[in-house]
Length: 240
Image (cartoon, rainbow, N blue to C red; front, side):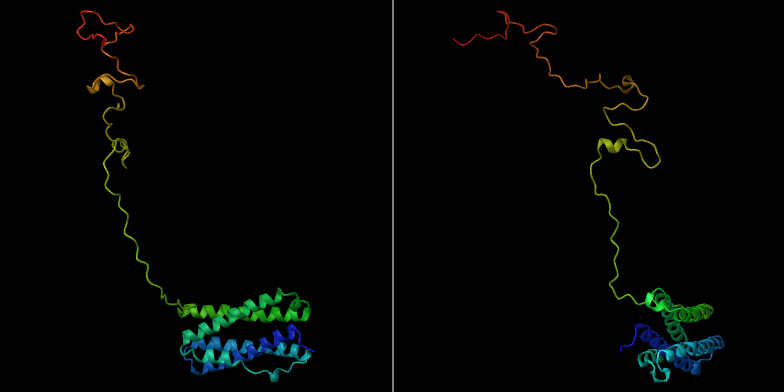
């Protein structure tokens, strides 16, 4: 009979806790700062207490905790952390993942169906959340960042030079455009400035807005076309 998802997940959780106990013991052997030593001891004690009810629950599921092997991959990652800041970041990352894992399991119907298992998940999640908070407090006191900023290997972006307006001849609209001080420029030729009558400008009479053809000298001011007379020098005879 295949193992249920509950047994698989909880057995893996116990395996991780046993592995972290070994990691805490290893970090304690080389640590010299009293604040970090106290943190490691509290973590070690909390995990030793947590594996009791977890192992007891698995025994009722016919899982022997003595047969579980430590996670060698996790041990290798821990052994590569040679100084206190990197070791604390390693611990912080593990506790953060564990706290998120318990929240996910409590939202899973298969894991939360059993009241006993649900209560166990709540208790284990509270332990990791409390130790996560204490780890962050110690790192803040030692001024150790929670994570290292990864180096950026991308090419630097060179900012473009500011765009300048190309030269162009000034138009009538440019002469009349208000400047930044709020004063309007001088009026263009042929336009009336504010408050100035047309007679003050010394310009000619104002043209009509509508276009009209110029009258021919041959046309009178009020009449129609003037017939040529004999005395008119401009008259011509029709070619015969």
